[in-house]
Structures are given as C-alpha cells and as structure tokens.
Image 1: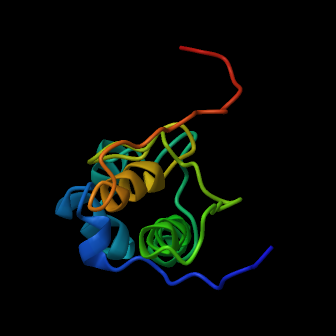
Image 2: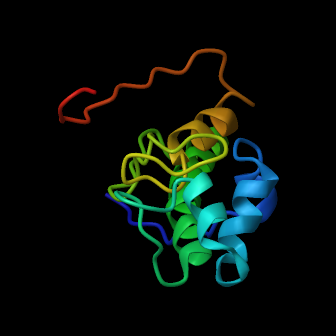
Length: 127
C-alpha cells in the first residue's frame, strides 16, 4: 500500500460542480450575513467551521488526487478515507457535507473513463 500526500483542490476544480457563489461565500465566509449563510445551508447540521475554505479544498483535493492517480495509471485502486461528502449540493451545504467530492471525482474520472461505478456505503436513515 502506498500513502500519497494529496493536493488541495483549486478554486477552478471546486467550481466544476459547485456554483461560484457558493464557493466564494465559503472562501469569504467572514464577510457573509447570517441570512446569506443560512441560504447556502451553513446552519444546523452544517455549522460554520474554522478555515472552511481550506477544509473543503483538502477534502475535495484528496478525492481528486485519488482520481488523478487512477487516470494516470499510477494506481489501480485508490481511496480517500476522509472522502464521501456526497450530500452537498451545487449551491449549498447539506447533511453534514460542505463539498461534494464524489461528484468532483466522477467529473474528473469521466475525462478518461466511459463508465464509472459509484457505490454508496453510507449507512443512515432516509428522509
């Protein structure tokens, strides 16, 4: 097994799925009004975190690093044990998820592979 240091996702990578308004709101979180933060889901189960932009960049970057390793052929298998934040939507946080690293990774993988199998092993109650 090889452990690889990941590269944080860039702004451009984050907005391949997420809206620029959402990512910019997180990047400039200290300047946002409370009602604007609520509109993008930063309340309840998705509270504001210290250095949120860095956090989402690292979570997404770890999954993107894994995807890029598969694309390049460097790895036959790859996993991000801290990934799987699949509840986040294009323009809002939801379900304890601030960034959808799954969608970002699938978008990256689809640049090379025609078929991608995603299996959700998330075990929790439904709505």
